[in-house]
Image 1 (spheres, rainbow over the protein chains, first blue to last red):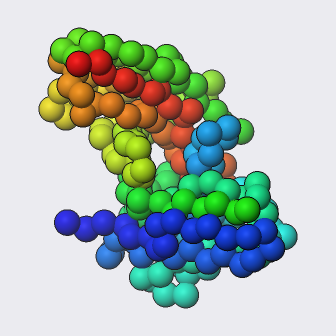
Image 2 (image 1 turned 90 degrees about the vertical axis):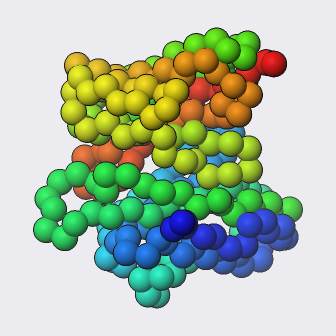
Length: 120
Length: 112
């Protein structure tokens, strides 16, 4: 049963500390998405990778957030320095978009269980 | 940018009742996805729709892709307590990022 895995599941940290969240996409998937979920804003897209290349990170605060894919099996989302307003659940999702496909996003996305972040 | 609206925002129903919820957009979508999120978990894909007018079922769930391509509907028949959760609709945007936009969700509570 292939699943997206995320670590850690929970993180409590103090304002100003660096936070690193990790995601292992489903094997064979070539798109990875990072979302943030809050009660007020719902699910917001932060970053989107295809074949490990960042395609869209317009939803991410550039001054403190960074997203990378060191290899096809690992995606990371870092916050440095963290602030209380960053408290949220961060989800990673993966999907598959065939190479050469023009237009249209991955037909489906499969979500991980999320990382619950609390910044004090 | 494109936004999705879902109604109702929340609903309380008795076990055994049927449920209907919908999702609307001001823009045309060519794919509609319906997800369910349970407490403490990530959204789980329920149904994907790819063609206007398409009607697709998954067990007690049935979803339809609206003819106008600006809406979609999800029905749950004979609800059970494990249907509790938040139901999200989603669709791909065609901004340069080609990402998905999610609706705000419909929170379903099933009373025994």
